[in-house]
Image 1: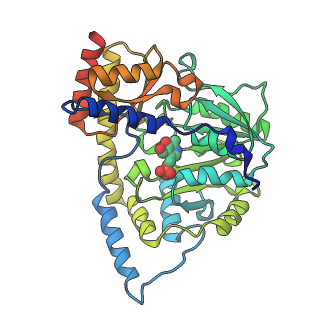
Image 2: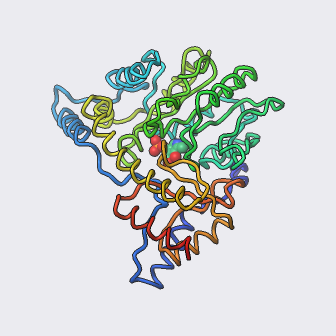
Image 3: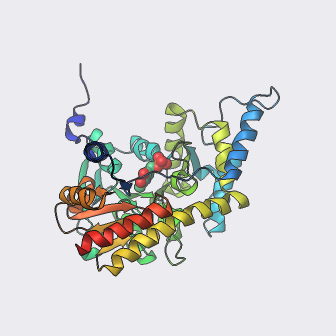
Amino acid sequence: MKINRHFDEIQDSYLFAEVENRVAAYKKKYPEKSVIKLGIGDVTLPLPPAVVDAGVRAVRELGQSDTFRGYGPYRGYSFLTRAIAEYYARRGIALSEDEVFVSDGAKSDIGNILDLFDSDCTVLVPDPVYPVYVDTNLMQGRKIVYADATEANGFLPLPDESRRVDLIYICSPNNPTGAVYDRAGLKAWVDYALDCGAVILFDAAYEFFVGDARLPRSVYEIEGAERCAVEFCSLSKTAGFTGTRCGYTIVPHALGNLNKMWLRRQSTKFNGVSYAVQRMAEAVFGEEGMAQCAQNVAVYKQNAALISDTLTDMHIYHTGGINAPYIWLKCGMDSWEFFDRLLAKANVVGTPGAGFGRNGEGFFRLTAFNDCQSTAEAMRRFRRFFSA
Ligand code: PLP
């Protein structure tokens, strides 16, 4: 059997499994302890009511012969691509509807877009990073070079003009660091990509968490980005769709053949998102849906702010937590050792930075996806832990 040997180059994805194993072993030994999880990368609040209502209505339509629907359009139903284009228009970005592609989430598109690029491309990935960017490229045998994100650059690396690359990954707000590029930072990347003839793969999965109007939520806020960037977005964290599954990708016509190629790719390998889920996604972009999503995200943002304020108060270096659901703190020791100590002494769980790349060592990720009471209790425990 001739299998894809590039799979030998990817590491086992043991990060979250190992976290779970260690927590389970601790709970088995100390069943009386209440452990608080701030490692969760999944939403915890239910779907907004406007979204649920839209889903119920859509399912009923599917049960009637005059409103039944089968396969939908490859790009997504026009009621949804229009709603997404209008969402961008409200933020001053003009898109045509056929630059919007609906999918079952950002992760699939981030992996699948690589069908459009030669395996010979050199890929620039920040370190630390959302591991999907690295693994999807390694699986196809591409060469990866890293942009170091460190305390020195606030975990927001800028281009190294002496290096030429073909594909550039940018995630802002960032997972795992919560750091967000300002317009000048993103402009530097756009200018660099235009100069290299590279394509930016911009992951905007957390754009809805950006509250500061000075910070860009879309790469297309930067002049020239439509000529060099594809943008991935997701309703997972915006609207609680991690289980429901819906996202979208913007492939501008100004990117030459890529828009046509992506449609060709999708129509060959993908048969779309279910009608009911697309109706639920449409409801996200309505006035009521947007307000309800903002209410849910405000809960996570309140948790993030509490974590960030607590760390600031304790003079612990960290990024994120203001315009992102992630807080990335300097633990100043082996990140797995910190994980074990925090679990044993404070009964709080986070994610060791080493799991996100070489530069993640010495750092630790906390997330805002728990309830307010548990997050507040975790922060009380943090204070005791650090003052002990
Ligand atoms: N991009 C980033 C940076 C993420 O952190 C995640 C999920 O954790 C995704 C994409 C995946 O989003 P989706 O649920 O839409 O596949």
